[in-house]
Image (cartoon, rainbow, N blue to C red; front, top):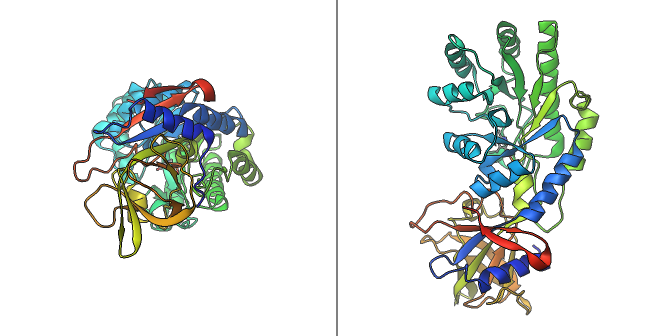
Length: 414
Ligand SMILES: *Cc1c(COP(=O)(O)O)cnc(C)c1O
């Protein structure tokens, strides 16, 4: 694990500390770098043709400042709960730029989505029957489709793989009778015009994801053939591009994914369908970090331990599954400058009252001392923005950094 830190991140850390934003009552903060975010969104847009519409997966980071920023940068928004839906509306997304696709939508959530006209994906045949009922007496401008599980297999992380044979999401394409039932469902409902697939997040190799998209485009072609005309006019290919958490390099890139897709699913690139993507982690993870104060340090059974203010409340996945979700950590001094000195193995622990609240075990870092800081990299998504309430720890202050290196501004993310 690389513990070096870029000059920009240390400059931001020093600014946060000198402005007293790591307060006694809030000794850790989350940061999103809007310059870096704009660069990522630029690379995403350049990788795909203009008929692709890129929806940001709100679950990765639904903070008001983040959603408003990605909207301003031209993204749409994928939401999967009533609160994410409300956050997207508050951030100014137009209904047609909101993709609503959670697995447990209530009748009233469906009613609202149909009423305002979002992009809406039903998860199963029972939900489709509810939409039938709701549409019996009204029409809707919503783009409506079905989420498909192409059952192409799981990646290396079970909990984020959504295309295994028994994954809970969508209609299982290969199960007996489902393919024919889907084609019949589309034949019977002219308002079904879209298909959705999301093969998984983090840990899914690109070729698995592309295979899942291929399977769903084959289904779209079969539905079109059965209808005797183009019926599937929108295809949502989900998100799930993995993120490299080991160092600052970005791989795989959006370009690499686009190249593989172009080779295997050329239909997506001929402009005949609107294509939606739903990237979350690959857009936001590497543009954010956590900065936390080291409160105490000690030695236990020969092991050095630094007790910091960042633990399970901001990094639940890493604390509970440290081998699957390792995070890079840098040691900074009291002012936020890179800490000099030889690397020494030490545990980096959090503030929660359970023994497993450790962010990194036996991590080689310059020796931490009270008053130092730890900078936890690549935590822009699914970390401080999705806090885990434990010990009633206080909410996490989060800031946006905008502007060039020498004159950036820091504002609250709300
Ligand atoms: C979580 C999720 C995403 C985003 O996944 P990332 O790995 O963050 O890109 C997109 N679509 C759906 C349906 C999801 O559940």
